[in-house]
Structures are given as structure tokens and as C-alpha cells.
Length: 393
Image 1: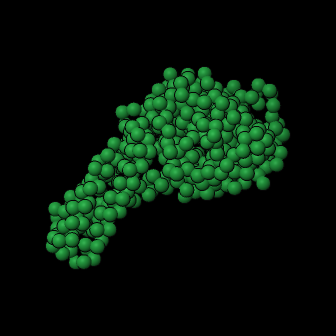
Image 2: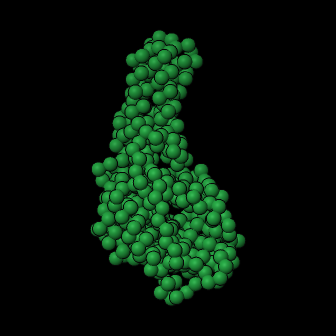
Image 3: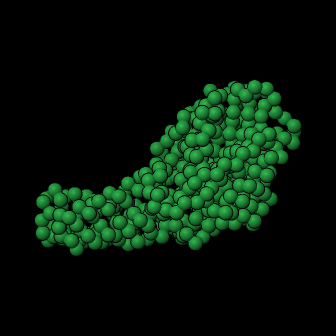
């Protein structure tokens, strides 16, 4: 697994969502999986890779414009436009980042991404199916995760969101008062808005589009742990009687779970044809942070309790007490399955404070944890066997 992670990092660099390198890495994974699986499918889909994080500069620019319009316009019209800009920024944040919806995707350039799906069949009738997942793409660098972590991330995000809320509230109050002359208390309230402009400017640089990280931890660790289960079964010439074991390597997870969403859209009926569970593996870096993600998509999605119990039972069986956790902020591919009505849960080992390696150039093959990858593999393997024996409880 470690050699495989290094190989991808060195030979398939800059695997941003929808990039040529991402597609080539997926073809490489498909070739490997054909050694161990009965069926391997690759499926292309259209993605707007820059939309998921590209809305941030748009929203921030809207915030700056809203402040200027309120303070320089001094009219009902400019205040309405100011409030509308803030509202648009807030809607982009909610729908693109919190809910992972395609809200402003149409504003951004299209690209082609790819999923890889491998199936190892049972020797009898398929009555159950477990899918282990990772994602092949890598993130653009988070500027303030690299420069300061929470010391910079926290104030910049809070200042930006707070600035939008304050500016919107002042505009509403101003309009409700009949748009009086901008003097006295209204002048003061308007000038206070300028205190938030530095936060708007700083958040414009939240993403460093010039640097695509190697993604060794996020998420090649998960890709190789998921594939290793099929590899071990093939090397042992082992199959279950009625349980199908699958591996899904998605593309464009870092663009808003677009690969997982496309996969469930195409295969929902098939997946619901028998008892199916998806286990999304994510950033296997810190053993003490290994947790079962019962809350996903920044807490807006509740993953399957039965699937969570499956992982906790598997963890206990291999000597690891797993705790339930949520992702704040962020998401895993499990959310896309849950939203489609399919049992799903995530397993991750990352501190979301975040650490300096998270979504930065330090996420490389020299900064991984073989212990955490191995432990996650043990849990995933055990989960497959427990699922075969008992299904979802």
C-alpha cells in the first residue's frame, strides 16, 4: 500500500477534479483492480471542478461590493442591491458548501471526471453487497490551512460570515426605516461594515489554485485500504457464498462529492436490489482520530445507524474502540449514498481542526501513517466479514 501511494504521488501529480492526471490515475487503479475483481467498470461524468470552492471569491467580492454600495449609494436602490449581493453570497455558501448542491456550477468551466467500480462476486446468489470507497482526486491547497491553521482559518471564516450577516442586517434595518439620509447612527453603522472588508479580501485567497496537493493522506490512503480487501481475497482465492464485495474509487470528491453523486444516480436501482452498505474511507492519518462518521455534510446528513454499528462492531473485534463523530465542516462520499436512500457511513482518521497537512502541500507520501492505514484496513476487512455473517443490525 505504501509503495502504491508513493507511485501515484510521483507519477500522477496534480490530480485535481476533472483533470487528465485524475483520469489517468483512475485508469491505473482500474488496471490493478482487474487482477482481483470479476468486473471493473470505469464511468465518465461531467463536472464543473472549480465551482465548489470557486464560489468563495465571488461571495467575498459580493461582500465588498455590498459594503461600498451601502456607504456610497445612500439610496433605496443601492441598499436593495447591497442586500441582494449579501443574500446571493449567503446562498452560494449554503447550497455549494454546506449542502453540496450544484448552485453556481453553470458559471464555471466543464471538465470530465471518472469513477472506477470493481466487483468481486460471491460463488452463489448475491444477497448482500458491501462497497468500500475512496477517492482518487486531490484538493487544491487551502491557503490558511497551510499558513496558520485554526489561528488564521477561524478568524477569517468567522469574520467573513459575520461581515455578511452584519451588512445584511444593517441593510434590512435601513430599508425598514425608509432609507433615511446616511448620517448619524446610520453613518456609524455603515462605517463599521468596513471593518469586515479585510476578512472578505483574505477569504478570497482561501484556495491557492496554483498548488494541487499530492493527496497521499486525502485520499490515497483510503483508495489503497479499500483495494487491499479485494487483493487479499483474490490472493487467498476466497469468495463469500452470498456477499458481493466491491471497491468504488470516485473522482471529483473534492469538487463536492460529484463522483459519488453521479454513481448513485446511475446505480441507485441496482444498489437497492439487495441489502447494500457503503463504507467511505477518508484520510487515514491519525489512529487516535479514527472515528465513525455518523453525521456528514457539515452535520446536515445523518448516516445510517446500522452501518455505523457495523463499523463499531468491526473496530471492537480488532481491538479499536471507535467513537461516533461528525464532520464540521466537510463531507464524505457516504453522504451521497445516504441521500439516495442507501445505507452508508464514513470511517476517517483526521483531526478537522485542521492539522497543517490537511489540504496542503504537506499531504505527501513522506507524511503518512502506516499504522493508521493498517488499522483502518483491519477494520474494513472485519466489517466485510461481519456484514457477511449478520448483515445490518
